[in-house]
Length: 149
Image 1 (tube, rainbow, N blue to C red):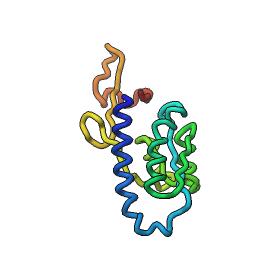
Image 2: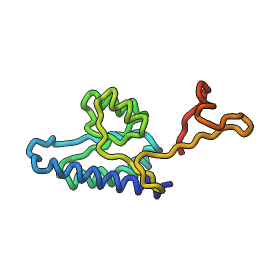
Image 3: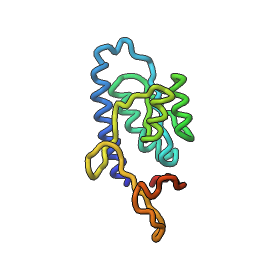
Image 4: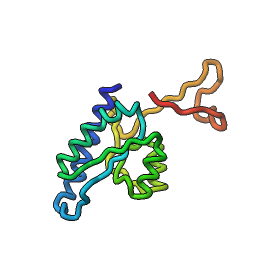
């Protein structure tokens, strides 16, 4: 799983760098610092380990300070974006939808599935054996929970 996550970070870094490189020509208008918000997908120590190299790479490539901000939940990152305290962020699918709605976020980079190479992610719905729930139509109107691994 860590290997897939690192692959996604490499793809995201490459894409972000290519996108940002088009802005380099007008670097005189750049801010002195960019703030990078990261939603919690693991413990804060591993988040620093996972996103620290990306932060450093962007800082070195852009020639300006890039500060990483970790939040306890995605709402904190989105609120920071809405109030211009966070310039760009790593978001999951649901948090991106919320950020687009509440903070006018625009996706620059999309994760790709490590196995299929397709953008996005794959979800699995598990039901109790014998429940009779076998299709999306079967679970319509039922209560269920989301989790991630």
